[in-house]
Amino acid sequence: MMTHTPETDTLKIRDLSKTYGKFRALDTVSLGVDQGEFLTLLGPSGSGKTTLLMSIAGFIQPDHGQITLGGRDITHMPPEKRSFGMVFQGYALFPHLTVNDNVMFPLKMRGEKGAQAARRVAEALELVGLSDKGIRYPRELSGGQQQRVALARAIVFQPHMLLLDEPLSALDTQLRGQLQSELKRLHRAVGLTFIYVTHDQSEALSMSDRIAVMREGRLEQVGRPDDLYDRPANRFVAEFMGVENFLPPELSGGQHTLALRAHALELAAGRGRVAAHVTERDYYGAEIRYTAHTESGVPLRFKIAAGQGESLPQEGDAIGLDWQDKDALPLADH
Ligand SMILES: Nc1ncnc2c1ncn2[C@@H]1O[C@H](COP(=O)(O)OP(=O)(O)OP(=O)(O)O)[C@@H](O)[C@H]1O
Ligand SMILES: [Mg+2]
Image (cartoon, rainbow, N blue to C red; front, side, top):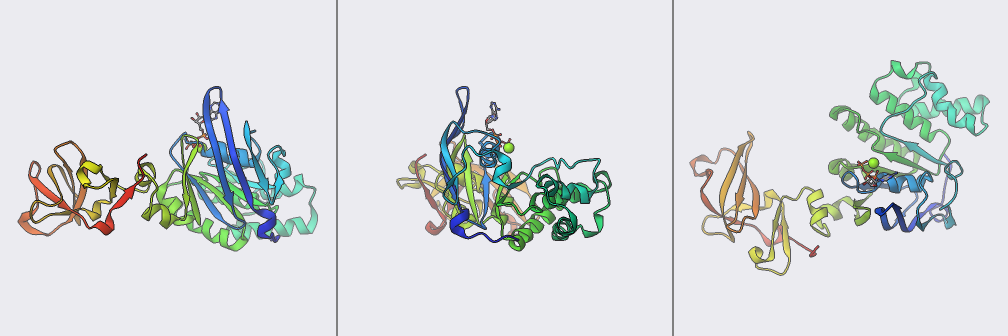
């Protein structure tokens, strides 16, 4: 594969905005992506992930802001000149072309042919584990295989980076997990910059070098997966990272809202730090999951390992809950 130095390939997005009528799909987004990095845009539906990715690709023109690649302004450069590989949710292979010809297509468009082009197609298919499927048609492949052909087609022309918009969302859970590991492996093997879009928190955590969390067209927090998981900047990011409990200052006794994961809350022997009554009790085999509510109506979720005898609280019981300070994350107030 082509080598790129970090200096020449760093993507920088500055103050990017895009409005549709009065609606702000992107609101002053700034973000840097390093050469070779696996960066994920994570956010709920409608948060602007695709709009940002399409702006990077050049298919959407931002109203304000700038995109540079290695210091060069590409904000208004047409998509085909940017040389970015793209993979989307619906694989969109050419149905009338074989796998080989599908992967050959971007090379043909660039005027490459002959033995060298054929060798590149073979290399790309080998990278995605489909060396033996070159003469098949897309309809003769499974969904996962088709998505791998789309990947091969996106990397065969040695793009500057790979942009992936929910490429696995059409696949079932098992295949998804398998392709997640394959994508990680491919990323390491080719050393390309990947910008990956998903609304799946666990997918983002397991695959990314860094994650940019989006909400309503803005970036809420950018950081390594463990940064976001252990130190979410605010309640929105904490909720997206699966935190279940938020204790307002009146209940926590501090100055900030405290974020607490369910496993950090435990049943107190006495009154505990917070009083509540049990409103829901769900049996999950190895554990029992509880919801309790404080007097002021704040829901609290916690778990107890099964097999702890008759002392397990029942619906309606008054209980106290404790936690250790080290497990509580104080949140900024927004
Ligand atoms: N061409 C358009 N005209 C008007 N509004 C648009 C247009 N494209 C996108 N939007 C709006 O901009 C917002 C962001 O859309 P975008 O497709 O970027 O979201 P997303 O984060 O990719 O969501 P999803 O997870 O559902 O794919 C949405 O509210 C969408 O309705
Ligand atoms: Mg989208």
